[in-house]
Image (cartoon, rainbow, N blue to C red; front, side):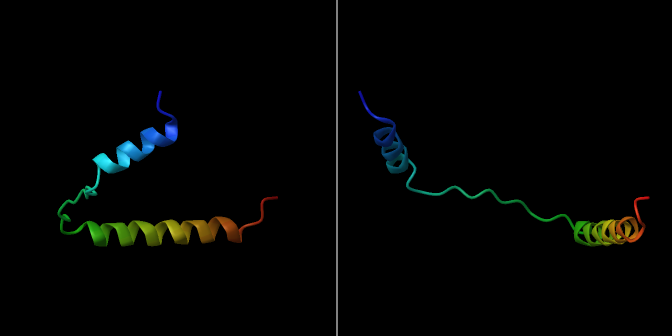
Length: 53
């Protein structure tokens, strides 16, 4: 019976090549992300600037 260490070594030997998942960027999403991220930072600063009580 193989131990868990032996099983992990078998898996490493079987998967010698690393698989990399890629996709093409959709134009315009970078700008949208930056706008939404900036708005979220402004909103967080607004919330943190007001006292809780």
